[in-house]
Structures are given as structure tokens and as C-alpha cells.
Length: 386
Image (cartoon, rainbow, N blue to C red):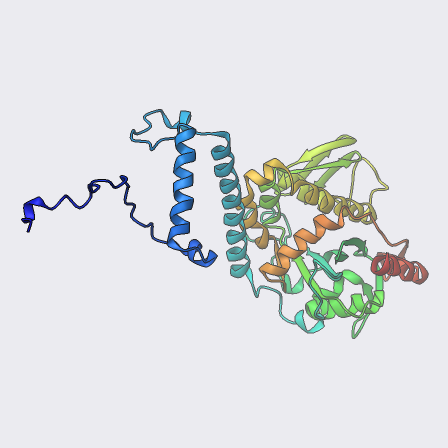
């Protein structure tokens, strides 16, 4: 009988036996379990990987990489973090846009919603949007010191009336001159721009529907002139071709108004200059320049804004532009619809200039424009159907 001291060690081979190595089974991970692999299969795969590393000279690293961080960066890592930064920049801008739009939600003048019809998603289906610019002035900032300014939106006139067919790959516009003579229910024949002052946005929408025959207007945008220049500056201004412009609004800069002096050609305009151009109806350098030419210029300004949205400058200033954009308008549209509007305008491309062909006349001592009903019908058909 042998004593305990005579028992060979457990891990040493007995006499006549071949030496062997004992391996501990690797625990199966989640992926291995999902594959249905056994412990032995997991071990075999890991052993094969270790043998391959050994043949390739890839041993376990036991030292810390002390190279400067810029030497440890590969182009793949740089690309990865660049993409993450760009995505983060866009996400930040979207969040700011949504928050700003939420803050400005519900600021549409009372009565407008009753005349609006629901429309489909603008990314897939055309909607009819009415864009209106009022002649009331902001109480602070650019335009607040103009002589004789009206600061009440309730009794303002509509300086700009533009119908925009937008969505589903479509982008078409039609401007209605502010001096167009129409029959305003309860007030008789007046310039169409008086409908808002006579009965608010509901009456203005009703008159525009009656005049154009368009019974479904889906959205309303009222441009806020006080915030318009800031947004234009955010996107780096706009580039636009103009004729010779000599404009002095409300007596020019010297009297608290605005002055714009442009030679014929292409110009990059800042926010104040773009707003002045959009408001110019009287051009001292061209007596033939009137409200019709102003409407054509307003449509070109919208196209110029659309073109500027995809520039490097706008991207670098995207959070500021996203925050300021909802403040430029009063509208029934929320953040999602406004984002769809911007995307749809890019997809639809630059809309061609479309104006009504009207005849100058005088009615009750006022200069007016007499519409041609056949021309109105043709223009509206083109707007709605292309």
C-alpha cells in the first residue's frame, strides 16, 4: 500500500502515458448561444483564432501606446467622428427648429382657421398655401421708426398676396396685385388688399377664394417683416439679379425709412436690403416699375432664399437659421409641416414667375388694376395643374 506521498501530481503524466494539456472551456456568449454552438465549438473557434494570430505575429499587446493622439488617428477614425459631428449639428438644428416652432405655435390671427381646409403631407401631395405680407410695422427693430407707420395688424392692408402650390414634387406660385379691384362682401368694390382691414384674415381668405375660384386653401403664412432681415442674414444673404433700383421707402434712411440703390446685374443682398427690395413699388430710376414688377421680384426673392438654404454658409449657421425661421412667419403649420414645406420647396425646384395680366384704371379716385377673368382662370388652372 502506497502512502499519499507516493501519489503522482494530478497534472503530471503517469508512466507510459502521453503528456496532454487541460483547457478550460470558454463560456458561450449570447451570439454563440443564438448560433446554437456548443462549448467545444466555441473553444475550437477561439483556438483557431489564436493560432492565426500567432502565425501573423499578432500577439497580445502588453504596452500602452504613448504616441500623441494625432498620430494614433487613422483616416477611418477621423471620418467616423466627422460624420458624427455633422449628424449632431443637424440634429441640434432640428431640435432648435422644433422648440422655436412650438414657441410660435398658435400665433395665427383669429378667424383664419375657419377658412382653411386640411391638406395631405407636403412631401407626397400638393397643398395650396396662401402667403400674405401686411403693411403694419414692427414696434421695435427695422421699420419701427418709419413715418406714419401702422403698428396694428388688425387694421393692416395686405401688401403681398401670393398663392403657392407646393408639395409632391410641385412648386408653382401666382401673385395677386394688391391694387386688384374686387367685390368685397359687405363693403362693395375695393382694392383686394383692403379685405384684411375690413374683416380680418377670414374675410381676406374668403375674397381670395371668390376671386380665384380656389375653394380649398390648406395653409396660411403671414410674413413678419420685423424678423425677416435677421433670417436672411442667418443664411448669408441672398443672391439675385435686379434691374436698376433707386428706392426710398418712407423718405429713405435719413427719415427713418429705407434706401436701396442697385445697378443692373447680380447682387448679394443682406437682410435689410432684401426686405427693402421686396417692399419697393416706386423706383425713381424706372417710372414703369410698379406693383407688378415688385411681385415678380418677391417671387425671385423666394427662389433666392431656397437656393441659399443648401449652401455651406447656411449649414455652418444652421442652428441660428433654424431657431429664427419660425419667427419669420405666423402660420397654422406646426414644426413638422414647416419642415415638410422647406424640404418640398427644395424638391420642387425654383418656381417660375407667374403674374396676373391686369389693366390700370381709376375707381372712386383711386388707382386700381382691373382683372381679366379669362386670364385669372387660365393662371389659376396653371397654378393648380401645371
